[in-house]
Length: 184
Image (tube, rainbow, N blue to C red; front, side):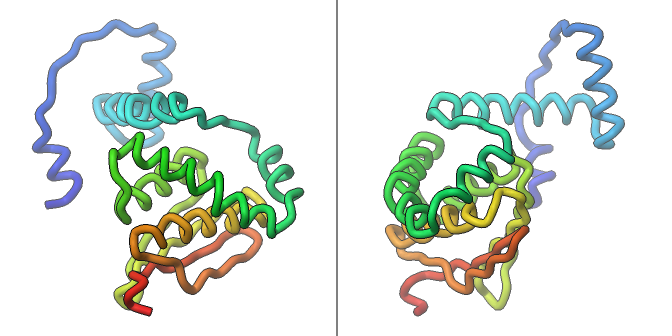
């Protein structure tokens, strides 16, 4: 069953609300831009608010300008970034996974990573190559951000019997594959 079919089978409720006319006009403009219905747009916005933005605020995540983040991350030596990834970065990731999903497994790790990327306008692509899950990221968050992410991923994946392999980095992207450690 496709995601669209599952969405169509979900139980829905009719709700009547009043909204500001200017906001209504902006919502309708977005619908035209995105070529989706008002109902779909509002459901997406509400889902993001309830299932993402409110939760990350509760967990203490912070927002900052990309250029500021890039400058801060790139000013930290590579070995320090790698240490942060395997210590506080991993413990905070584990806390986030437990808070959002109630458990830690490969699917929850990848779902959280995908949501993090999409919420910060980082391009995320997941595919299977030769039977192995491959993650491809396009970003503008600096040279050290991939080291932080892959370090966190490896640290938490190792705890559940997986690891990254074939990491590749360049100035605007990185990729890695995920395998079970027993496949090594």
